[in-house]
Figure 1 (cartoon, rainbow, N blue to C red):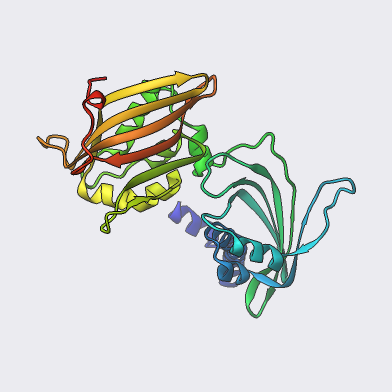
Figure 2: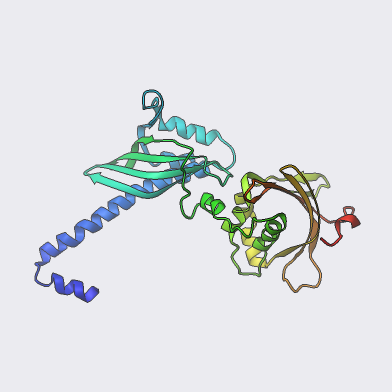
Length: 320
């Protein structure tokens, strides 16, 4: 293709060729810069980085939503929205856009894109719609001065590569039964050193608002507890599991079900290599499961490890 292009351009003067080749590259660069600004705004929203968010907007930027009795909601300042984001706690909302369309004329740009929004720490789409960002180009580059969106909760299609897409794309075999989802849970975090874990598969097992809660005793001898979302667990433990090697398996299970509630006491052993004769840790995962009529979900995993003075009772060591 490279040689074919040269033959086609041969009869054309150098000046005309330069114009033909330079214009599309310039447009693509400007469009990419516009998309980057919008994505930085969302990055700041997701991490609650108000400085990053403010770096993408012009003073006096306005936010409005289309809808309601008049067809247009009341305006508010983007700065007020950023303040609300900064005052929140935990993970911020994860807004993602798909196939953005960018139009540029001089110093004015418009970005139009379908979006999905997932609340911080969740995997299910809260709402979706269309975002329109208006940007101006000044000495400080492209800055957002107006944001307009629509808002709906039905017909929301997950965007590829997002946590919502992973949750929607659970392998049916992983979630077909209580035993299947517990087996998948242990399997997905296990593997030799150097093997990347499939965190999308991991997320697909959990219901929205799911929590992982380790408890134990600190150096001061006092009981401690920590609460994590599936994403926070993956971030906190992923690199350690992948660097050191980690295999965890269920050795006993006691489960009870009432209505939609299933509670499983799943006794586990942890090894650095599958062939290790002895585990380096044992404990009990208290796992709450939910069946929605089509598949199983993990709601909560609450666990403690075996240690001096906290031996696993014999009734929780019976073979499943």
